[in-house]
Amino acid sequence: MSTSSLSINPALSPPPFFASTSSSCSYKYTPKVFASKVSCFSTSGTSKPSCQICVKVQSLQCNRSKRSKELTVLKVRPFSRRPFLAACTSSDMTIREYREEEEEENPPPLLESETNSRPRRIALFVEPSPFAYISGYKNRFQNFIKYLREMGDEVMVVTTHEGVPEEFYGAKLIGSRSFPCPWYQKVPLSLALSPRIISAVAQFKPDIIHASSPGIMVFGALAIAKLLSVPIVMSYHTHVPVYIPRYTFSWLVKPMWLVIKFLHRAADLTLVPSAAIAKDLQAARVTAANRIRLWNKGVDSDSFHPRFRSQEMRLRLSNGEPDRPLIVHVGRLGVEKSLDFLKRVMDELPEARIAFIGDGPYREELEKMFSSMPAVFTGMLQGEELSQAYASGDVFVMPSESETLGLVVLEAMSSGLPVVAARAGGIPDIIPEDQQGKTSYLFNPGDLDDCLSKLKPLLHNQELRETIGKAARVEMEKYDWRAATRKIRNEQYNAAIWFWRKKRAQFLRPLQWLFRRVFQPPAIEM
Image (cartoon, rainbow, N blue to C red; front, side, top):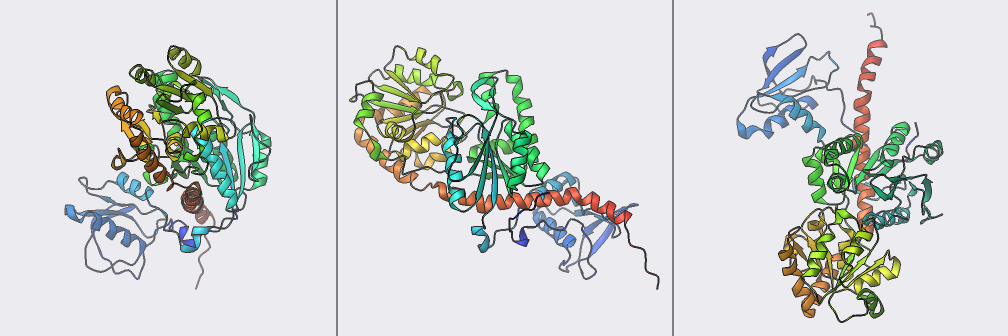
């Protein structure tokens, strides 16, 4: 077992796991039922509790005082080492509900000294590669690595082998041999469980492992975390159950949810990119609600800026007609993105031009679909060219209903471009209802008339377009990758470690009981 160098406030240690009564506690119980091993009590008396069990009883009683129900408590006899359980009458709290309440116990708040934790070692398992595969999470992980290194942490990145650079902000990079996803050939997958990788991670001695999910590599990350006995955080980036019906058999949705539950219940903490995805995971009971945390959004407002507007790029995107209204879409060209909806939009806007920036398995079919229309497909753009493409359009349209967040929407708004996007997935987290018509617009998914009612005024009214574009830019300046990284590093990782310590102590409890039984010290004769 590797020794962690992480220093955490003792208050972050889990509570004691063997409940015992205190002889100094004056809180009184009135016996109701007696059994051979378990006694049942109801609370009574006015004394204040001082022992751990009685405090819990009083807390449970107070939480349900409005119902005026009799609280009953299952309490193990003093000689038993079994954990304390509580339950109410059949019309009130059940034992199962109590256990769920116990599971939802949160770590204590951080001390002021913990908001700037000392350097630590973090192993990231990211699939597919954030250096080669074009996706919204590419910028998220690249900025995450960058700012972790800036904060003094040692970082190891295990990812799919294609396109892995020799160095990235001083992080140690390891490529794992990959294979194409069966139903999405351009997505490389890898288990990352070769002896070479296990040995490298073991020698690195991580304080915490962080894996992207769902996928194949996350299984390898989980196995290595268990082998090394270190906490593991999983961040959920692709809403696979929504994608499955579009690429393969619908009956696979239920098994996929079971796989996701297995992974994230084994994790110590789950990070999600938006509140909408958090609600979906909670509704599916993927893991305890208190173990699902938000990974705050961010955008590189220096790289995506209105100053990159370029007449030359606009000529390219509009196919030589820069005076025509220009719609821009940036992202992976996949069938799950609902890009066929844009064909219906363009049928109603013969005066407009549209540019697709990006690549993907759906590109060939899209090119055929738009062959008779004024559409430009640039392929993948990066760096300053991508910044120019955003800033040189008139309106950004996002019809996708499956976005876990929609980082391209953030980048478009940061570039001063008004956005018209489907009210689905994580997009409403970026454009809340109170910002409707101020920073951008949302339309009901698949509703052509609703989309056109928001899009046409923007395309034909330059003053409105500029006003909303400027407001969008001001709004995006609030979102900073450095602050988002600091929150994950100093708060969410500490919470994961607290949950891990608690889980480990619970796992060791039977062994501790057995040890006490086998090695019970002999009684001392007086």
